[in-house]
Amino acid sequence: MTQQATLGTNRTGMAVAAQRGQEMLAGMDEFPPTSQGSAKDIAMVRMAYAQEAEPLGSVPQPTGMKNKVRTAVKAITGAMPTLLMDKLGERLAFERTGARLYEALVSKYEAFGSFDGGPSKVDLEHILQEEYGHFTLLQSVIERLGGDPTAVTPSANLHATASHGVMQVIVDPRTTLLQSLEAILIAELADNACWEALMALAQEAGEDTLMTQCEQALLTEQEHLAKVQSWLAAGQGRSSTMRNTVG
Amino acid sequence: MALNLLQDKGVPLTRQRFTWKDLVQRPFSKLDDDAFTRVRVILMNGIESEALRFSHACARMNQDLQQALAHVRRVEQHQQTLVNWLNPADQSPLETTIGFEQVAIEVTASVAESEPDPYLAQVYRFGLLEDFDHMYRYAALMDRVEGKDANTLVQSYSDILPGRPTSIEHRYPLDDLRRPYNRTQAAFLTKLHALTIMAGEHQTHDYYMTIGPMFADPLARQLYAEIASIEEQHVTQYESIIDATETWLEKWLLHEANEVYNYYSCVEYEQNPHIKQIWERFLDYELGHLRFVADLFENTEKRDAAEVLEQACPAPIRYASHRAFVRDVLRQEVHLSAVGSEFVDRDQESEETRDYRTHMNAEGSPSDTVAASYIWTPGTELAASAQSKQ
Image (cartoon, rainbow over all chains, first blue to last red; front, side, top):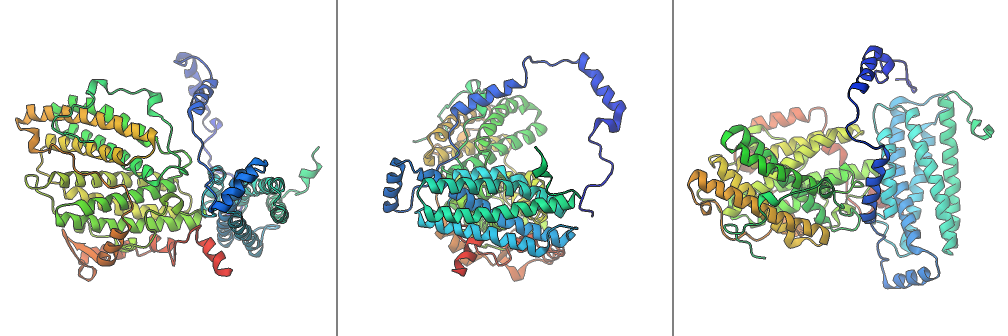
């Protein structure tokens, strides 16, 4: 199988069956809509449900009384420890799933091989180890701050839902390594933005050690993103520096 | 709350009404609600699904009952909708699957412990160990493909351990048929148990058959195919324990009584106030159905409904951890298989079962592959690797 899509018998467009397409359009005048309004009516229903909705869930209580006191004190000083814990849980879950995603990318490499300018197996395994390292780092940080690293925080849950499609692409045996890199790009972009946010939250909370750890992780993630972007550019036969010349 | 199944009127059928808004209510929280709320929602969806399934089969075989069945069935359709739509959108199909297996473990354990017929109690324990193993296999899938911990859903109520290995649960069709209870001699509770577990397993089968192809990972697709096949065996097993000589109306009456029993059990245990109100409302609806069908039964068959029903509702299904019971069963009965309707040691299995299993597993066993050397660990096996490196 080639890494890129090829020409074939795609039937999704109307141009493939022009006569049937004309017949479809011919029916519109004879059979008009049966209810008035517009697509905005859906928004009205969304708003009505949103007003009655409850949150996805909560951040669990800290694991000891000492930490509860600590949480209370910081909440008063505006350090937002609950938000920080929510986001730490989010990154932990994301990095743990990220390690599994890179495992799947390694098997994709083993199935299809790479391409000119694409990743080697060592490249992918290196990132896998770094994602795993971030997961273990966050585990210890959460424990140190009195949290439970086995809990799913609301933000962890939210990001898992949002990134479900990334996994669906990468574990699908029909997608190539190049196509799978398109999916991991989404994960790496999100990862960069979220580590940056976590670093800022750590700074707000006065967690200097954590801030330094986040900064280091962010540097690593920036490397991952740059590598993925360069592999995609190589796979698509374009320059990877185009982004910087726009504007 | 004491129910009288022979007299309580509940809400009359004509007053059982819904709107589309009413059908789509606030879901439970995957993160904050108790795992048993999910268990109840999943089971009650199965109970209502069975109400529809039975009603359609009955209508196809009984012209005279079609109008009465259509009336009740429309309400059951909307009850099922309202209940099933309580599942939240952020609960993925695999996460819901973990919920289905927790139903199969904890509800079947409760039934097995309470079942007065020793042979049928054995049937439930037999099925229990197989579903127990499915939980472990799906947990491994969730961990190894998605990097998620199934215990965040199970909430430490149920063990995530190997049971009777799924790869050896495959049996020749005739080795899944059991002996039925006798409709004239069996306890009322026995009949309710059989309907409850059959309904739960049937819905599990249908759910896996629906969502299996939604997975992209080829091993996940294989695993769902394999476990759906076992759920089909379980439906075969559990429907065979029900006396086939019950009349259609007798079966309908028992279905309605079972719905009352199950909603009553939910009401007794539910902690989420919003969802408890739903269970209470539907308990009243089901009492209305029961009265409607009891009258129909008495007028049509010229028999007293008390020949089929008992006045008092049995003790509710226990929505609690059955860890000690399940481990005892695991220790004592994991080696069992079945020949025809009888349970035997695995070395006495039929040639037909061995041939069938060997062929099915000839190109590999998805359930063995997914859980190769798998040990559940808090926070996934990646967390275990981290601990071992420290």
